[in-house]
Image (tube, rainbow, N blue to C red; front, top):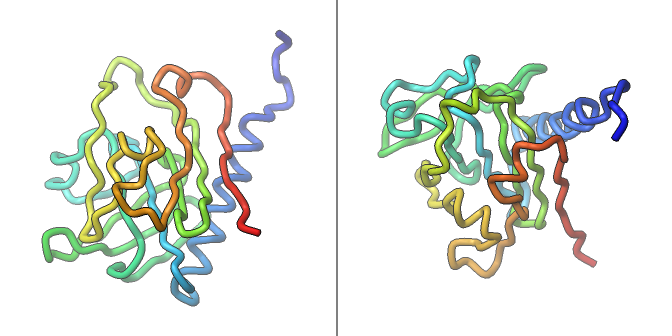
Length: 178
């Protein structure tokens, strides 16, 4: 196979992160319309992620947050977004760079994006912690399996298995309602 000298994978990653930024920007300005809500999974060990130490200890590798009813101060910018969420009735500030994103999904319209995140393979385990927020979202395993935590009204982005996540293929799965 020939070497990609133009950097198509990087261009696609940037375009997909731009979609996330625009969705977050619209939510920040006008709230989430209708049944829209977001599942955002990110690598907590990314050097630019800023989360409280207790959350970092609880989710040392990866964490999924749900943006639906209880979030405040959503501020997307060119590099990432700031948000305040409630964990166990305690408000916490998070700073999540787009470069740390693993998945972004809006199950209300069966839309999802999966990103390739560069990580140190020596510090990775195959276990993934469950989603963390006041709104109970699907665990990472449920998202990987394509299940929706028993709620038949939503669908999830299909995720590739652990082996295929390490290659340079970008997955973009969504369906359009007619």
